[in-house]
Image 1 (cartoon, rainbow, N blue to C red):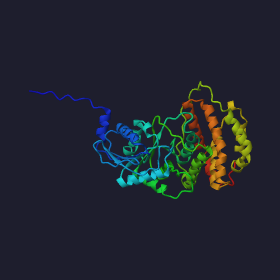
Image 2: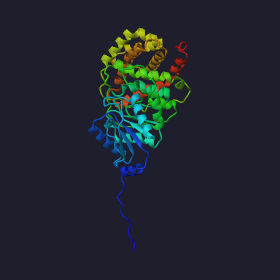
Image 3: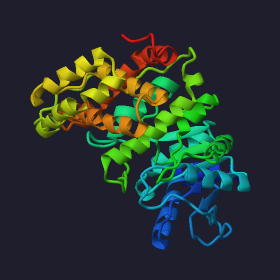
Length: 406
């Protein structure tokens, strides 16, 4: 007498994912300082994103506890990252790396403030990039609006992409995933004495990964709440960020000057013109005109005559036509980088003189994007492409600063 095969229920994708991960290697997840309620919410959020994954979950002040059946082992650790932090610092990487070494965790996911706003898909892709695809560093690319991540779009992404060949749109990340060997490298860099600064020293993981020939991946990560810096003075904040980046670029000059393939920024198809009203940048344009009048003598110590002439044209343009050409912007930043290296003028004064130029780029960006996110993204890619095209300029000026002056 024959018997019918047993009827089985369809297995959900999440169950399949969990089964595949049940015997997987552990993932260390380091959280910022959170309340007890926030920790429980984050724990549930992570379990949803990574079902079946063995996890070491580290949270400042959390009670250490073994795995109770859900795959999570709780750890307590000292984190520099707080709920008000807007970017990962050297101290954050060091604390996470020490924990990874202690527990021999092959992959670490370091999360910043407002981590509960990260989508489950983003958490899964970051973890998979290191655990499965064996990337040494994985950074998220969050969806941003025309007013978001402007320092990254204007400066950090273009410089990182052009000089280090790594198209990381947010190279000063709020969240990052990395391998154990990347953790060890970050810890070594983080332990180096830093120059005196009133804030925690920053660290540039993309540059560290590329000079070590480590694999870097950028993963689409959807939307995320991006916390704002506690420092409200733009001069101070910009000097901190750009000063740190310029110092790092200066230290790695031997690497980025070598002939090597640079990944170009490739603008996608130009979006259709926005039907929205252009933003009113009249006050920003007028502010730049005043800066051009007041800072000409300082800028003349840094910029060649051709660039000064270009800035003069920008300053004279009416607000409706105000625009910072991408090639002029790229050369201007490269000249400031060189002046920082040569200490042409006091570094603090130099970075202060850069702020009005950055605000001119922002005004141009806002006018061009007209509140449209796709147009803003396209303009950011055009800016990055200009830095790639002008890379020979900074290489030549760096090598022969006295005789190379167009």
